[in-house]
Image (cartoon, rainbow, N blue to C red; front, side):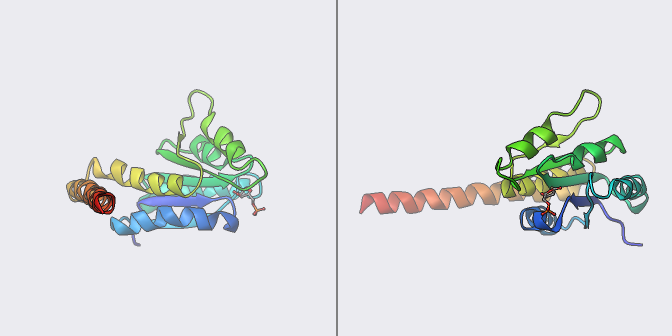
Length: 168
Ligand code: RP5
Protein backbone atom coordinates (compact mmCIF):
# COMPACT_ATOMS: atom_id res chain seq x y z
CA UNK A 1 0.00 0.00 0.00
CA UNK A 2 1.27 3.47 -0.95
CA UNK A 3 2.31 5.47 2.11
CA UNK A 4 0.37 8.71 2.62
CA UNK A 5 2.41 11.43 4.36
CA UNK A 6 -0.20 14.16 4.77
CA UNK A 7 -3.95 13.88 5.29
CA UNK A 8 -6.00 16.87 4.17
CA UNK A 9 -9.48 17.01 5.65
CA UNK A 10 -12.20 19.51 4.85
CA UNK A 11 -15.64 19.97 6.32
CA UNK A 12 -17.50 20.18 3.02
CA UNK A 13 -17.00 20.05 -0.73
CA UNK A 14 -17.65 23.80 -0.61
CA UNK A 15 -14.19 24.13 1.03
CA UNK A 16 -12.36 22.51 -1.89
CA UNK A 17 -11.74 25.68 -3.90
CA UNK A 18 -9.66 26.91 -0.93
CA UNK A 19 -8.10 23.62 0.19
CA UNK A 20 -6.90 22.74 -3.32
CA UNK A 21 -3.95 25.08 -2.69
CA UNK A 22 -2.67 22.72 0.02
CA UNK A 23 -2.73 19.84 -2.49
CA UNK A 24 -0.95 22.01 -5.06
CA UNK A 25 2.05 22.76 -2.84
CA UNK A 26 2.37 19.17 -1.59
CA UNK A 27 2.34 17.93 -5.19
CA UNK A 28 4.99 20.52 -6.10
CA UNK A 29 7.29 19.03 -3.43
CA UNK A 30 6.43 15.42 -4.27
CA UNK A 31 4.75 14.78 -0.91
CA UNK A 32 1.99 12.18 -0.99
CA UNK A 33 -1.36 13.37 0.31
CA UNK A 34 -4.87 12.10 0.62
CA UNK A 35 -7.97 14.23 0.82
CA UNK A 36 -11.23 13.55 2.68
CA UNK A 37 -14.47 15.39 3.21
CA UNK A 38 -15.28 14.77 6.85
CA UNK A 39 -17.18 17.05 9.20
CA UNK A 40 -16.74 17.54 12.94
CA UNK A 41 -20.47 18.15 13.23
CA UNK A 42 -22.02 16.09 10.43
CA UNK A 43 -19.81 12.97 10.59
CA UNK A 44 -18.15 13.02 14.03
CA UNK A 45 -17.70 9.24 14.26
CA UNK A 46 -16.05 9.06 10.84
CA UNK A 47 -13.60 11.83 11.79
CA UNK A 48 -12.48 9.83 14.83
CA UNK A 49 -12.18 6.62 12.79
CA UNK A 50 -10.16 8.29 10.03
CA UNK A 51 -7.79 10.09 12.40
CA UNK A 52 -7.07 7.04 14.55
CA UNK A 53 -6.38 4.87 11.46
CA UNK A 54 -4.26 7.46 9.62
CA UNK A 55 -0.86 6.65 11.24
CA UNK A 56 -1.14 3.07 9.91
CA UNK A 57 -1.15 4.56 6.38
CA UNK A 58 1.99 6.59 7.10
CA UNK A 59 0.32 9.92 7.84
CA UNK A 60 2.65 12.28 9.75
CA UNK A 61 0.73 15.56 9.52
CA UNK A 62 -2.95 16.51 9.33
CA UNK A 63 -4.28 19.60 7.59
CA UNK A 64 -7.89 20.44 8.41
CA UNK A 65 -9.86 23.21 6.71
CA UNK A 66 -13.35 24.26 7.69
CA UNK A 67 -15.64 27.26 7.74
CA UNK A 68 -18.35 28.56 10.09
CA UNK A 69 -18.05 27.11 13.63
CA UNK A 70 -14.88 25.43 12.41
CA UNK A 71 -14.21 22.67 14.93
CA UNK A 72 -12.71 20.16 12.51
CA UNK A 73 -9.02 20.89 13.23
CA UNK A 74 -9.64 20.87 16.97
CA UNK A 75 -11.53 17.60 16.87
CA UNK A 76 -8.78 16.03 14.75
CA UNK A 77 -6.24 17.25 17.33
CA UNK A 78 -8.31 15.70 20.12
CA UNK A 79 -7.77 12.25 18.56
CA UNK A 80 -4.05 12.40 17.68
CA UNK A 81 -0.58 13.37 18.88
CA UNK A 82 0.52 14.18 15.30
CA UNK A 83 0.74 17.85 14.29
CA UNK A 84 -2.55 19.39 13.15
CA UNK A 85 -2.55 22.45 10.89
CA UNK A 86 -5.85 24.33 10.80
CA UNK A 87 -7.12 26.42 7.89
CA UNK A 88 -10.06 28.72 8.63
CA UNK A 89 -12.37 29.24 5.64
CA UNK A 90 -14.64 32.15 4.78
CA UNK A 91 -18.00 30.39 4.51
CA UNK A 92 -20.51 32.65 6.28
CA UNK A 93 -21.63 36.24 6.74
CA UNK A 94 -18.79 36.61 9.28
CA UNK A 95 -16.24 36.22 6.45
CA UNK A 96 -13.99 33.67 8.14
CA UNK A 97 -13.60 35.45 11.47
CA UNK A 98 -15.88 32.80 13.00
CA UNK A 99 -13.73 30.00 11.56
CA UNK A 100 -10.49 31.73 12.57
CA UNK A 101 -11.55 32.08 16.20
CA UNK A 102 -12.98 28.55 16.35
CA UNK A 103 -9.76 27.12 14.91
CA UNK A 104 -7.20 29.19 16.80
CA UNK A 105 -8.70 29.40 20.29
CA UNK A 106 -7.90 25.86 21.37
CA UNK A 107 -7.85 25.00 25.05
CA UNK A 108 -4.45 24.36 26.60
CA UNK A 109 -3.25 20.81 25.97
CA UNK A 110 -4.76 20.34 22.50
CA UNK A 111 -2.68 22.40 20.03
CA UNK A 112 -3.73 23.35 16.51
CA UNK A 113 -1.30 25.41 14.42
CA UNK A 114 -3.66 27.90 12.79
CA UNK A 115 -3.03 29.54 9.43
CA UNK A 116 -4.48 32.55 7.60
CA UNK A 117 -8.10 32.55 6.49
CA UNK A 118 -8.53 31.28 2.95
CA UNK A 119 -6.23 30.26 0.12
CA UNK A 120 -3.01 31.76 1.56
CA UNK A 121 -3.67 29.74 4.71
CA UNK A 122 -4.24 26.53 2.75
CA UNK A 123 -1.06 27.07 0.73
CA UNK A 124 1.01 27.87 3.82
CA UNK A 125 -0.39 24.88 5.70
CA UNK A 126 0.80 22.69 2.82
CA UNK A 127 4.21 24.36 2.89
CA UNK A 128 4.43 24.01 6.66
CA UNK A 129 3.64 20.30 6.36
CA UNK A 130 6.58 20.05 3.94
CA UNK A 131 8.77 21.87 6.49
CA UNK A 132 7.77 19.41 9.21
CA UNK A 133 8.55 16.41 6.99
CA UNK A 134 11.83 18.04 5.87
CA UNK A 135 13.19 17.87 9.44
CA UNK A 136 13.92 14.20 8.81
CA UNK A 137 14.24 14.28 5.01
CA UNK A 138 17.34 15.93 3.53
CA UNK A 139 16.07 15.87 -0.07
CA UNK A 140 12.92 17.69 0.97
CA UNK A 141 14.98 20.19 2.99
CA UNK A 142 17.10 20.93 -0.10
CA UNK A 143 13.93 21.50 -2.16
CA UNK A 144 12.75 24.02 0.44
CA UNK A 145 16.06 25.93 0.19
CA UNK A 146 15.66 26.07 -3.60
CA UNK A 147 12.00 27.15 -3.22
CA UNK A 148 13.07 30.16 -1.13
CA UNK A 149 15.77 31.06 -3.66
CA UNK A 150 13.27 30.90 -6.52
CA UNK A 151 10.79 33.02 -4.58
CA UNK A 152 13.42 35.68 -3.90
CA UNK A 153 14.45 35.63 -7.57
CA UNK A 154 10.81 36.25 -8.61
CA UNK A 155 10.58 39.25 -6.28
CA UNK A 156 13.90 40.52 -7.64
CA UNK A 157 12.53 40.26 -11.18
CA UNK A 158 9.34 42.12 -10.24
CA UNK A 159 11.39 44.88 -8.62
CA UNK A 160 13.60 45.12 -11.70
CA UNK A 161 10.49 45.53 -13.87
CA UNK A 162 9.16 48.23 -11.55
CA UNK A 163 12.44 50.14 -11.69
CA UNK A 164 12.39 49.97 -15.50
CA UNK A 165 8.83 51.27 -15.57
CA UNK A 166 9.60 54.14 -13.19
CA UNK A 167 12.67 55.13 -15.19
CA UNK A 168 10.59 55.73 -18.35
C1 RP5 B 1 -18.45 23.85 7.53
O1 RP5 B 1 -19.57 24.52 7.12
C2 RP5 B 1 -17.72 23.47 6.27
O2 RP5 B 1 -16.35 23.34 6.53
C3 RP5 B 1 -18.02 24.60 5.33
O3 RP5 B 1 -17.00 25.57 5.31
C4 RP5 B 1 -19.29 25.21 5.93
C5 RP5 B 1 -20.46 25.16 5.00
O4 RP5 B 1 -20.68 23.84 4.57
P1 RP5 B 1 -21.74 23.52 3.44
O5 RP5 B 1 -23.07 23.94 3.99
O6 RP5 B 1 -21.34 24.31 2.23
O7 RP5 B 1 -21.65 22.03 3.21
O8 RP5 B 1 -18.75 22.72 8.28
